[in-house]
Image: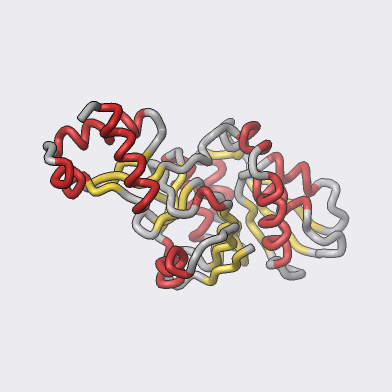
Length: 251
């Protein structure tokens, strides 16, 4: 079997089963595990999949830069933002993570809502500058240009002094095995820091993030409280997320 044929088959299995087990596939094809692992490495370098112990999972497509992500999936993100905005109660202190979906959430906060929003995203702070009754606490630090958020020791120190009711966390992948993931190690650590300061953590996720994984783990699904997801999926697909104890809101 040619390399191109093997890679096409791997992608077919990944789409069908949601994962590839290197040992199982090598036995089915009568090939060495090393051959399959080499193919997985090459496909991972092309951004097709995310390697994990024993095989691979679908790679999250939500890894483009902020400007590109701003242009993709806007209707779905607007719907997710609207649902997320409805979960915020008057008087709450809320942390809005960076990300294009949370920008939509900020845009759709009711004009009469009185609450405090903490964020390390200049984009969200600018959106809320026009809101008549939401107080904004902007966390400073070194600008991580990919996500347009502040990061670094100054950001961590400021966040550690704040307790929030709800954290709307941005992710690039959600998978029953790998949990919530993202594409940058420092950003993953920052998200964990914020989650520790929050009474609950909510994730708003577009369809392509469900069942996908990125390189750096944030937390297991059990570390989250609520998932708001754009799905046309069966209960079987959502079952592992319910089993993790998540409250799930579907669009």
